[in-house]
Every structure is written in structure tokens, then in C-alpha cells.
Length: 108
Image 1 (cartoon, one colour):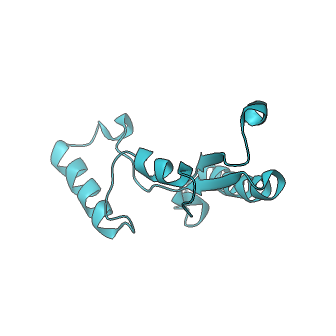
Image 2 (cartoon, rainbow, N blue to C red):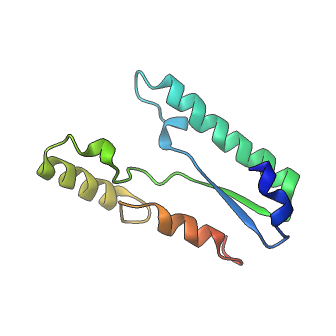
């Protein structure tokens, strides 16, 4: 990431991806909890160090990836629908839209 700095300007934005395990890890996920917490800490430090470049972190929730292909179709579909209903964004699926929103200048 630091090798990209020469190509960024004051209106640039960096968006990192984290996950809920940094806040609410389930049993057996201490490694993922550590990784997610580290990403969020890195974001806070970079935001200070690189200001006025905006640095954000997105925790998109459950994202539809091949990781879930082993689940029965109906069960997987139900999981994503339930997640979307409980999500602050009221959606689940690809996280690209969340990241795009944070990269648009003037958005907070």
C-alpha cells in the first residue's frame, strides 16, 4: 500500500476491508479477530499519518463468495436474505458498492 503513495493526491481515498470478528469473534476465531482488529488499528493510524487523504475501513458483513458454495442453495439464500434484513445497509452480497461510496470525494 505504501508504494502507492506517490500516485495519490490530497483528494485520494484508501479503503481497507475488515470484518465483524474484530468486534464480536465467535469461539475458535481468535486469529481472524486479531487480523480484523489489526486492520482497523492500521486504518486509524494511516488516517492520522496520511491526512488529508481519507482512510476508511469497511466491514461488509456476509459477502457472497465461493466459500459458501458447499451450503445447500436454499439455506445459503436464506442466510443472505436474513443478513440483508438485519444489515444497516439492508442488503448483502458484493461489497463493492460500500467501497465505492467511501471513495467518492465529499462522502463521509
